[in-house]
Amino acid sequence: MSKFFILFLGCILLNASLFAQANKKKHFVRQSGQVSVSYNWYDAQPVNYPNFRPRYESNILALNANYSIQVGKYFSLPFGIHISNRKKTYNLPELPQESIVSYVQNPRNNVHIDPTYRWVKLHLGSHTPQYSTLTAGDLQIFGAGIELTPGKFILSANYGKSQIAIEPDPVYNIQGAYRRDLMGARIGFGNVNGSKFTLNFVKVKDDASSVINHPIGIEPMEGVTVSPLIEFKLGKKIKIKTETAASIFTQNTSVDTSIFDEPMIAELSRFVTINAWTRADVAHQSRIDYRVKHFSIGGELKYVGPGYTPAGYYAMETDYLDYRLNTTAQLLEEKIDFRGTIGIRNNNVQKTVIQTTQRIIGSTSVNVKFSKAFSVRASYSNFGMNNNSADYYQRVEYVNNSISVRPSLKIKRKNIRHQISAGWKKGLYRQYDVKILDFTKRSTQSFNAAYRATLKPIPLQFGFTGLYIDNQSTISSFNMMNIGMNVGYKLLDKKLKPGLSVTYSKIQRTGYTPNNRINTKLKLKYKINKKLNIKMAYSLNWNRYGSYRPNAELTENKFQTTISQKF
Image (cartoon, rainbow, N blue to C red; front, side, top):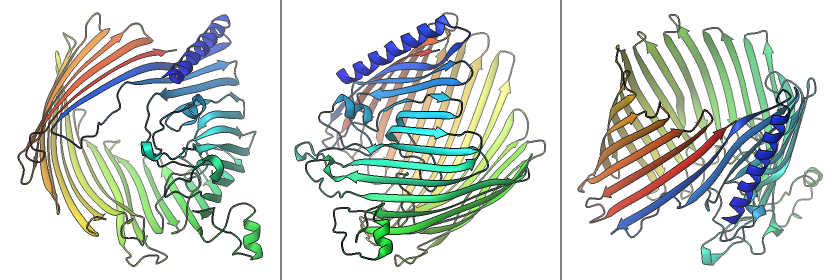
């Protein structure tokens, strides 16, 4: 906890210093942003539930700050601090002990400063390089970066850790991880947010010496991804974008590299380790769009080879070829809003596995405004993915189809306003199950309805909700009924806003007696002034299980409070 409070105190002192400077030069220095501190307490009390795993961590303190100082016309100093004493993160194991340095660099936190002057922008701390859809875009690093955009020139460079080193420890069941560094750059000309030509380069590498003991089941890796990207307009209505990328990835850099003596491979080995664990492949994406005021249509082609691995993304589906058509239209003075995507995806293009599939992928939605009060929204989607693994126990494949219809009605009267909505959704899901080495199917159908009323003479709101879900699969089936009510009021000249909601759920599994759940949530918001407010929420979740877990009960308590200040 001490490291958290050190950073928290540093943030407060920095904020006070900047605030004092802003007051001295009101017309030259401006500030904006928001700072909030939150505390979450969670407690679970299971009965006859031996394998229960808590859904949340207990006693979580978090600091979130987004703040910017604008000095004059050209210089700005934005910074952000998003830290907590949370122990776990979704892609890294928990650490029994953590220094202040590793705490700040851990991907579960985000601390950054991004000073900007005219066409120069720096990134210091946690940031995410975003070059293109095939090279880098969602991998956060802790390090430094620079973006230069003088005139039509584009230059970006980034370097930092995308993964911290974690020593394996069987006592605490910690698998361990190597430190992973990312280095990226792009150079080109044009407009960063418009027409441009850039060359993108991204490299990631594990440092095998960053841990003393070898993590079990994990090998050090290294990879490089490069691509040219072209984006331009033909007139005012046509936009074209195309990118071709190549990657070389070695899944185990500790293997002997002397088995290759070809001159070309020897030259490439100067940039990336190449051995028997190396895979090289390409990917391509092209798109053309035609846009006018109330209509657009575009086509997209995307190919990703089976061995392609983008260095700047966590994961990407491989070995497929996509053809897509995208369109939007607003008709009858924008009373009808239509959006649609349809395409064909062929997987196993390079015949890396036995099975090859072709499927239609797409989605469409239409929103019809019959009047100011009544509208209907309908949508359909068909999507799936697979990893084309030859190992049946590592295979991932699923296809999901869904259709939904949702009408809504608004009725305004002198003293009350009504909002009524309903919905129906049907889904079909097909997934490969590694436990049975075969496909399982599941169908889901749901109905929902909601009513909300707002009274004008008094600041009172209340509403009711209902939901019914029926899920049928080849392995098991269940249905759930959920009903709830909520009420809110405003006191003390609308500065104090209390709210209460109660929900009852009944879950029925085939062959078992039903589970029953009651959730009660109390919320309170107090507006101290225009920029400072405090929020509190408490929820009590009581579960009584049926014969699926005989005589099992679970009581969960959760409390959260947040203080936020705007500038």
